[in-house]
Image (cartoon, rainbow, N blue to C red; front, side, top):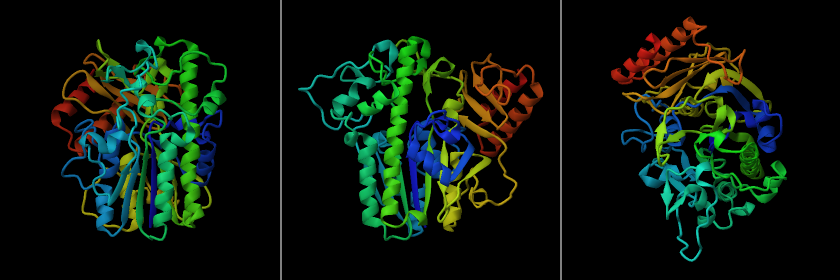
Length: 463
């Protein structure tokens, strides 16, 4: 089987027409979504970028055990399993956090190409070119400093032509992928994993897309969120950041579908299993938040527990099966740990490994089956101390959050009554809190979470 997986970093569910978007931000991907299987209840498992990739590549939840970390030495990742089964395996990425800093997520791929220069990845220093300040200190992320400058300042110094569309990372990555497809389309069994950091900040879409979404803005471009509260910004600045994000979504949609058109050009599109997904979303003003995490402290370099709402936790997943011609909406609750068991099942590749996820094959094939998952679990990690990162426990009807400071109680939202998650109704529905919370405790026990961590979560249900 030919397998093409395309990971789009920081892409929100609600920027798709299928996800309820009022405007067409991703026209090409919207078209693909309508002919594929679209998952209505797909949630982050481990969060953010690197923990997500660990869950995907191993089929196991990492957040009950640890946070951001290199691929574990004893892990047998997806690419290794398929390589040993006779598949040709290739990684093409511009995401700096897979290969850089010794994280090792290229392990198992027979070929891997890292298109460098994203975020803080300084490929070539430019001493003669001054680094210019891009945003005020109180409106951007300041926890990482390079050459005396913040992350918002670096991208146009590292990549001086970044505003030219052909020089954007998604365009460069898509063209590299297109070449790989030309060179390998005769192969009958391959795994092509494409990992693009777009639409992750900094939000620097080409000028024509900036004009499309915010033509009248004349202030400093809000290219990099502060990872904090939105009241640091004016309403016009918040609209500008949302517009720049929308431009990134539009750009990424176009170039991801450039890859799909190449598959069609070489005659293999209909024969491919194509999966397009995201790892998490981002806040652009909702819930008085910007970015995806809360950074506090004098240098805003302390990751502080923050309830994660749907803008971050609910993420797009589109899967087109080989020969599929008609799209379908999938109602089952799914998570990234399901990708690996699904791919192995569809390929007929046997493994003795134990997975936390479930094969999506029955629902992809339209079978009527009792789905084993009734709740989704999403977290940065679980600490063995307070304050603890919040865990989001999601169903189609409810969103329960457990964690925070020792004195924090459960937070429950009624999705049907309150789709924007604005009113905590835990006090009105204690039985619902207990049902969902107890099921979460059983889940933690089933994945062998440390007893002291489970005890802290149980404490929340006794509050």
